[in-house]
Image (cartoon, rainbow, N blue to C red; front, side, top):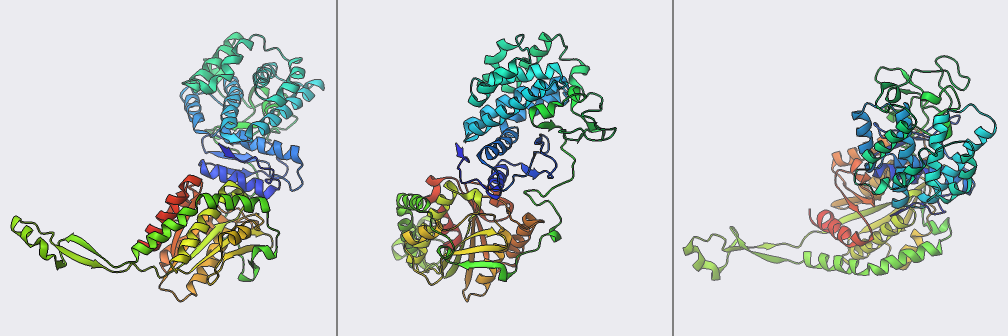
Length: 565
């Protein structure tokens, strides 16, 4: 289970970075809406999630609601949901039809249960979010808003089903029940909550929805119930304008995809708090996590804008984090000893026998009569480890806790082994706090530090954003200036850039890594920390999957990158 619930994700930058990391690992993108747009939505086909931008002064409730929105939309892109998208395409069901809206409502329950099981902290955030949406529906109904009765009854059933496992919903849903009648469907509650464990959940969901429509006297196979309804004016908007809370989507014919049957009233999207679409949302684009703009929009940091040195000179060490790093390092202390022994054995001159060429092995002469030609040996010279190794570590908010501790442990083990083998090395943690890029030195080239000092320095880094491309360029320039035969830059990170500068930071990092790899003056290597996102930027990479794989990851890096050239 992935833990993304830590209270330290309290500022907007860290929350956005955490969402970006989760999205990137799972192959979809997050885009942030303009300030006037608070309507979360998702595009199933293009794997895009649209979220309102978090603010800097959110209280705990607001943070939980924002995380709940993210968890909900991300849940729709879980692999389990692919079967549902295929089913809707096969059955030619529009997302905005009665059948489509009902499928979406029941699907919300299914995917939230999946999300709750797989992500620690998601359950509470989703429970808070759904209680908030239930309360909003109660407010609309208490004020006499014009609501679609079918939609309200469907939501009533959904809140009833949720009340069995979302405690916040259980507190407010009885008030919602006073305004709806789902008695004709209440017997389906156990099946709805059991979808997650059904062998064919998408088919079971569709069967439930069909039974719901049939109980309502509707034909679930009719074009009227499955097809795209005609656009209607809604919520006071004029002709051609987007209804509030709608995705403004476009179908294959280019026509607007409106909110469906409820668009003439308070829209389904406003009641549900989000919307789904076949193709995606068209809107005034805000800045996206991928920085989806032209490369020229991004202005790299100048060398004078880098804040360098010992992180302890600027921040207090977090004693709890320091202790956790030290504890994991002690559990993996054998790794550095193993790597040091590997350096030692690899550096010895030795003989390799059973060769076809080389010096003859006199004792093997008799074997030549039998036609054997592998009777030679050759001397294998000492493996050259004369390389400068630069370890560049991601210190962004999404790395906090488990990823950061794993990364710190791996770097400390590798550093100890490199020092023992007399291989020059430097370790740096990078982050960004406008107006500076912070490029904190954990261990300098000529410095000898023990594991406790390194853990103390790691725990003194305040994590913010990550301008990867700028830091890779800074390390690259430093390596080029060093008088060494080989230069190796190893970047440890969990994902894409997420920095304060507008523009294409993602494209800038790709341009930087492509340039370095193309020139061949510095050997570039990426290590993904609990994420394979490094493959987007680094041609040569490996992935540290969890704490248990620290040993194999560090050993492989030494064998393949530092020694095995």
